[in-house]
Length: 217
Image (cartoon, rainbow, N blue to C red; front, side, top):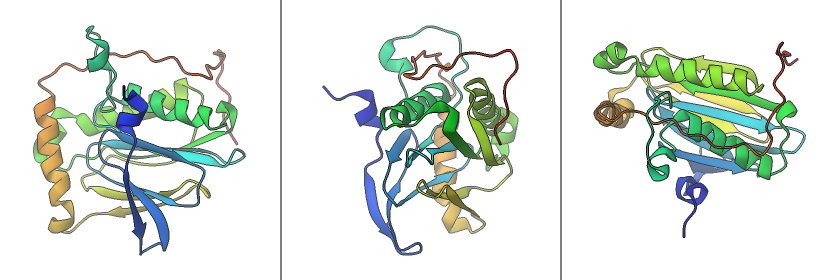
């Protein structure tokens, strides 16, 4: 039986000539965690990608989710355990980092996406909801946000280097570059007919909640 982690793992490996590096391309609803010196790449419209690493453990990763998991209706385990929802995608990423030796107090996050690349996406507010969700989630889980590039009207190509923590963000102005993103956004609008389902996944490294959150350096 294939686990949720295996089903959601990005598998598109390639060589990135621009960065002269081994690379993995993440599609929507995927994640990847690595200790290798490589680049993780994805393209975002209203979706959000979180890039998280522990520089001491030498491990980092990225995810790509489509919607915040802010619904309250119940549902089957199969339906709720979906990487398209931010709550599950974030917990999946953090759990895999913890398995690889990361420690919560050393985690550094950089978050991207949440744009409104279609006219009707502004009205539906998907990008803003995703952006608000990921910042709120990381604050709750006491993960320091070192950088962010959220919202706006243009799609983004994000290239993340987990070993160094470096991120290259390119806004996609050309019609050809953004065409696939716009098609994906149209499909995303259709998924909103389904009520997001709240899913609970226990983290392997559950923090002790404090009344006053400490800010990272």
